[in-house]
Image 1 (cartoon, rainbow, N blue to C red):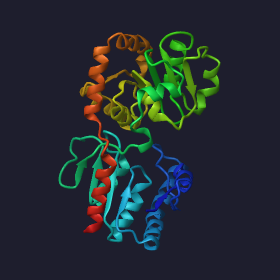
Image 2: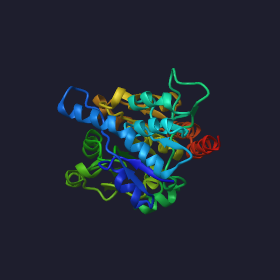
Image 3: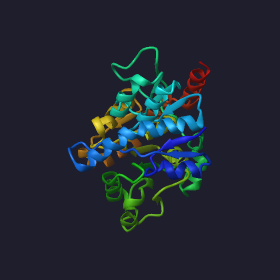
Image 4: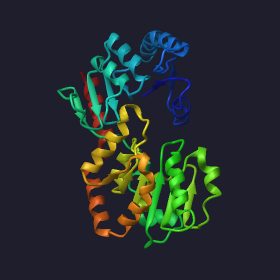
Length: 320
């Protein structure tokens, strides 16, 4: 298995670090307004399929998988032109522009959610693949890792990789001096500022962690954005308050969040109403029966076999 993508994105570092070969090609997203950068992006997009065909000719794969986003489109097109079967994955409850453009060239479309208007023989709803390292953590071991008591209420707070400033500010203001125990993964951007606002030993503040599964397992309730992490919350059975990022493309985080709210495992709070979250957390922590119902609901919606189902689908495509 090899990977291809932009030399300017995080995959160019993470893939080699994980021990896999990486083939870079120039590609970038399209700015939404006319500009010189849009012209440059169109030029790169025009060249990218040729670069991808060269990669495919060198690698000779049996099947190609596009992970969504603008990077995947040229490779899936190149695979079709090279008569190599290709599949796409969509991680959100809205089919992104790149996937909408590339879908006609793909033999299979793996969706995380059911999306109206996208069904048929080549569509399969599988959920979103999860990091194995984040699965199977125990509540007892997780709380011991973070130095928290086994019988105290614990709230987990986290946003995107860089952090979510509105969540970070809300958590530090609400619980920096008093309240339930907190495990807070802030991201690098706001970490230094938040450190000065936390004055409790049972408020565990981290910029990042290699033990995210323990963060989920330790919590009675999580306060989170509603990107890909929602599937990890479901797999961990963590009752959740989801605060979708308000500027996500096509508001897809709100669509993601409402899927889990409809299933009974989460409560959705708009970012504009984030100051209501602390009272909602207190309400949930005071109602163990409701938390138990939400945990059960999250587990019932989990799709821990998503990666296996995609792998099996790819093997079937390659076998054709």
